[in-house]
Image 1 (cartoon, rainbow, N blue to C red):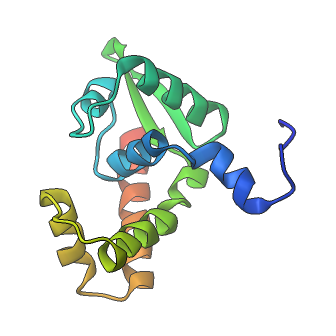
Image 2 (cartoon, rainbow, N blue to C red):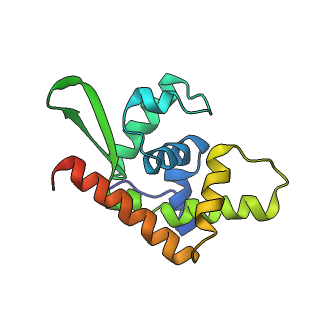
Image 3 (tube, one colour):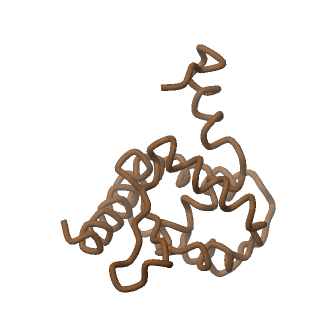
Length: 143
């Protein structure tokens, strides 16, 4: 385990997820992306070296794991660990903070997110999203 640069819990979490790329990767995983190529096709336009660095960083911090497909040893599949899945409430709250406080037009992903999450309580929506991801991950891993 690495030594933390601060005794502040906020600083400690920001050391892991405090850059925009990390949260976009986590968002994309919840949206069903699994491969390097799928992440590269995100509308935010990752630089390949940044994406490689962030994926490795998230693996090293226990938020992601990676496997190779049995029938295609070149393709790596990335997936969230339980620790990574536990970040979803933070993403949810950040997106709603954006809606409440920024005067922005949202694209199709944002519009769909707000439409879907409006129908239920935040707690229910968060739990449902986490459960759906966990079920899909476990099915994919044949757990």
